[in-house]
Image 1 (cartoon, each protein chain N blue to C red):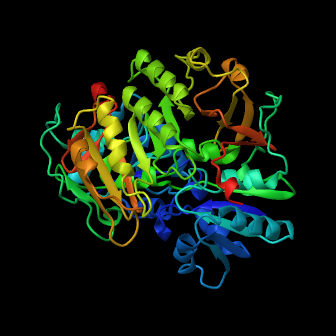
Image 2 (cartoon, rainbow over the protein chains, first blue to last red; image 1 turned 60 degrees about the vertical axis):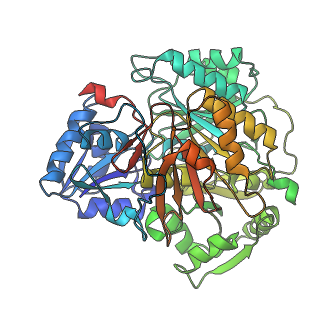
Length: 270
Length: 270
């Protein structure tokens, strides 16, 4: 059995029951060093296999090898393994020839077994794969700020290591023009300190006002957790780090008390 | 204390530890009848206050009244309370005068107390409010299908009860043109059986090919859970119900084995 487990922000209280159970019962826990260290405090006696960033494929191949050898392996991802996580990569690595075009598919066939694939897993590439979702940073950061994503929203990573910057800009413009609330992942890192400033510039050029309500959540679920509500103008000069998640409000987002809220109109039903 | 708790898809295994703890220790559980019934099986001895759809504001006002009277109240939301949930509405109802314009805000002030606002809550409108995030359907359905949202994505509700249809179309077009993967909430209900067909029509008009990989997840985390991968052309004729979550792939999304995957390029790092 190979399990991909989204551990949420990191603390035990933010993990789902099924993720905790998978960690308790597995033989081996695999992940990026920062995340395996979060888990090691809870399960100190497990076997761990941790590697650095950019070693994702190597680490997942190791996990696949162990699972094919009959071991019960869990790959931990921060937040949710399906959002900028390892779930997609593992599927790619499990199948020799990933299709480069869309083949004909049987549009009438169900895949999930009744009763829950999450308990059982589904066969792919010689292993039983089970993907357990988790609370991704968009949601855990939003809960600290209030409800910035309470209506339609877009999630965009500002990392251009795997996506060309032109494509990121195109998505920022589209999200601004269609009045989505926006959540930004990877607003900065050591190699890319200017990305948040550039993104804010694109949004301002796309017509967003400098007093648009924005927010940041830092160190979600960890020591030093904090959030701040600010204008888009101020966000442009904000120094984010790699533990910051950023929110751009839609045109109706407001600061209500100390909360950032995108109303959805339920209030009209009073 | 007033807590807004995202319970995920419904089963106990999909709830976070902190949500389960909040339900265990509270005096009263409030919610839409479908969700309180999911919780009642786990905590049969609690006091419940449940009302029907369109009674959201009335239900939240009741919860606020109880919290102001000193009781420990939990409002349960399916998935995450911050995504088409009650978190925003509760903030609106807690503050008498919701601003209609963006007032000046102190962009240098942190709001979250170090150590975690989720444990303590934050004052607003005379109550201590705590928002506990949960696994929203976009994530739990994606985990069944594979990893359709592994790169930038947009979340759009097809319900036009609170958003004009023109605005929904505008967001669909923008998401298609900027090559987001898209997750659709509320693809259909008794009053709106044609919304998914119309949305697929908009996406096809916006240039998406009829063989674009799409997927649906049904009854996530409940009896009858299933998923299906299909083309956009087939999705147009698919009969979704209100327990269906829909995924439109981006241009690079593929069917890999029986999984729907949007690759992110990690594989190039092998």
